Image 1 (cartoon, rainbow, N blue to C red):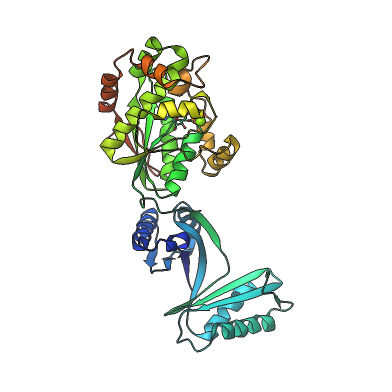
Image 2 (spheres, rainbow, N blue to C red):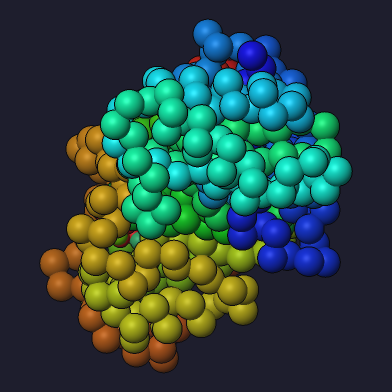
Length: 395
Ligand code: ATP
Ligand code: MG
């Protein structure tokens, strides 16, 4: 008996004008994810079908679970449109299940099939009642729900339902540039943005020798985790050392973080322009630290007109941690390597910085030359979820 993974498009199907683009992107992403498996993938307007080898099912499922744009899927048995074959298969499902009450739900899109849906329900239900002792029908809250879809060429029968990651296929939106630190919040922000279809690139600011190679490798590992939801991700590594040193030498200490973040945003805007990024994405969360009060965010944000998306802005830390655990970035994020933001933290950072003071303080050194220099010297690493991405991958 043939089996197939049956993917329903769910939320995608509400995108009328873009429907084909969404479906084709999903198809491309699934094909890409499953390229090393022995699968056949087909699509029509309502479903995608993946034929697989039984021995690879678990691996194929775990790949599918990381493709955005899949809300639910089933593993269906395919039989020809022959009521006797359908009866046998449905009975087999029942014999392999542990249940008392059951329901059959038939959809008949093939109007040539000689029985109506309700007649098919009756025939199949009767067949189970007759052959499985003690079974009863419960149409409201059955232990076992068997769905039967009679289509053009074949009938699909399934009882199990699996949840995918939801969202939209990665690549249905253009590129967003994620500020990726080694912390807990920014990988979660990146995951949530990708879930809306954003094609992600990441930017990491390092301040070697104040920060370590281990800290950089940790960010590479986090990028690798995020790459599991797409195919590969470009990680741009910015050498931020000179700028940070100048800030801490020249500017008043309570404004150092404000100014440092204004510099980061300026560099982000520059990188976006070079790499066709349309938005800056980061892991800022309202009120979490001094630089993330609304007044701080506003003074920092004023250096750019680009949209800044903050997917975790309104989440509690515990809610962010829940997602970090789910996507398996948490354990990496809590490794104790210094980030450039933590190395230079002043004792009393300004919680409500003033715009004019920030501008006055940062004018004390020639930051635009240093920004140009930092952007010119960016190292880009193409990080793929499957390979070993060390420095040899510098583009
Ligand atoms: P934590 O989970 O400990 O809060 P964090 O990464 O969120 O870590 P924050 O100081 O809260 O650290 O920084 C806010 C946001 O600024 C981060 O989520 C990230 O998007 C960005 N950011 C901070 N440091 C860096 C860095 N070194 N490189 C790139 N982005 C950074
Ligand atoms: Mg944070």
